[in-house]
Amino acid sequence: MDRSYKELLKMRRFPHTWCPGCGIGSVLKNIAMVLKDINWNNQNTTAVSGIGCSGRMSGYLNLDALHTPHGRALTAAEAIKSVRQDLNVIVLSGDGDLASIGGNHLLHTSRRNPDITVFCNDNEIYGLTGGQAGPTTPQRTKTITSPQGEPYPPLRLGRVLTTQAPYFYARTTVYHLNHFKTCIQEALLWKGFSFVDIISDCIELNGRRLGFKTAHQMFKWFDERFHIIEGVKDHLEEDELGIARAEREEGPKPEEKAKIKPEPQRRT
Image (cartoon, rainbow, N blue to C red; front, side, top):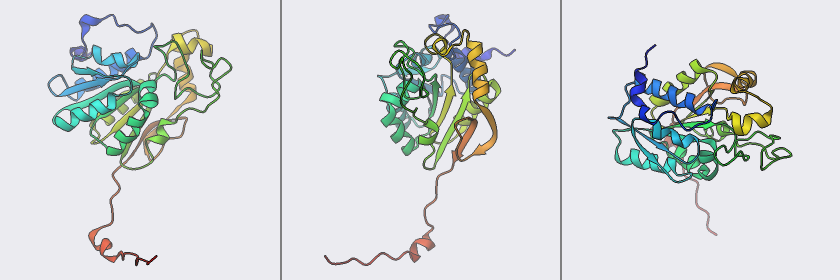
């Protein structure tokens, strides 16, 4: 087995800090493997992360990395890309950081369409702070802040990020490894803003409350919840794994603009 991807990991910092069975390790490993495959390295790539368990990924990558305040990973990544367009810029963070306090930045960074790739470890919970309900926590899920079940519907990232072209949104899971790696590579090679929503497990602070004893049981649950869609779609349904993308919408052609007559102004 080719283990050259380890060149992109700071092996001196291992063993890592995450709980046994956590999906973040799989996210980190597979991103490193694909980066190695496409020759993105510490000479041409930088990583930016936010706060939370997922944000610690950049500290294990052998790349120039920036650890930002809570919710500000996207603004930092966009700034880096603006002044160093020669660099490949990736963001590694979680659903709480990106979709809650960083939600406003997510809306407007995606709208401006900088050439950066975002990997969201979406474990549907606030893991680092003890297991509170987060922006993507499914309705009726019991957490320490919703002991009777989360009363509100989750934020649907796929709907938010595919409202207007151009966009690239992929949903995958840490269980569907081949599909996962395909989504990573397609996102990295996309010219413009790309977002990979990685459904992941937090067995210690989410899975056990859901009744799962092991991470493997959660993986099988992902397999039951989702099915893979081949090809590319405009939008993904909530039970679909796949890639949704759209090119930039073109405005009217010059000859078409000439035919558009301005409305006469009315005096008031």
